[in-house]
Length: 451
Image (cartoon, rainbow, N blue to C red; front, side):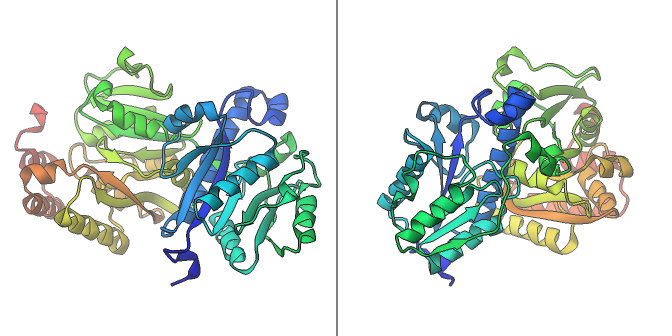
């Protein structure tokens, strides 16, 4: 077992963040592009960095993600807007060096043997940078990640505190050199990482003009039989993972008509959530949502699913994979049991080997792929099977190795093995060319006309 993954070798990954508020973040960019532009860019950088941290943390149970946030009074609001598998702690008062020193001191008190701190201003941070930082801390007591503007974007320490954090002047082009020299003067070996780039000024924006992580927009399309107020917890979960510019279209069976506003009971939800009536049938509802969507990446999501934290990072990252036609997540059930775990394992194995995911794995694709294959062709059942088959004639399949947890309601209602056998029987009948209405009657026990 690698020392970096040993369960007794507790390590902390610290992320410094500020509550996203207009006029309080990215002030140099706000001066040239306005407060709202600066706010939205900061949120994208924050979401991106959280996604990178979670990607690094995956498979490393000895690494804890600690988010130190400011202002301290806003911690409850930050926890509501940025929920996730991390511990949220307040930053102390004072200049940046003092706040960093106190964060490292907190980690020493908590018993962490190696700690890496990273900020949220980077447009090109990668999980491999974090891996390199922790690896260097095995060989040296200090690691620094130099930023192109003369600062540093990352600092890693073994349990030491040092005067390098005491100068009150920060944000200058000499910060990295000064900090490295201070550690060296104390006899501490310093390892350096690759240079990375902050986004602080108008000149820096050229780096992201063609980066889909910052330019793509996701439309989440949710077919449902429920009114918005009935799925508020689900909508809240999705809302807290959206990036600026993303949207949710909740499509329910009703008389066709224009896109509807949210009812008053849902006023607290994200402004980009819209309600769209459609004819009955999951395939029809998905097509209706896609037709009204404004994003360039479409995510087809069931209303009984719980996506993983950081899902937005994976979706926006997928937008850059032009060789990939379709994406999905790993399936899991919540609640679960050994029998359901076995069914999920079989579904995930089938997805890896045969490249045939189901709709409850959260299928996503670029708008261009959806348009090229003509959307969903089956109105009621097996719409996902046909969609996947045709989409994958245009490119590969990306499988996100994080679970999307779906409710096993039908398995529990009908019996786990009976429901599984019925699903496979329907797949066989579909392959034999049985029509959609017959499959619907076999599955639901009623005619499609009766809903």
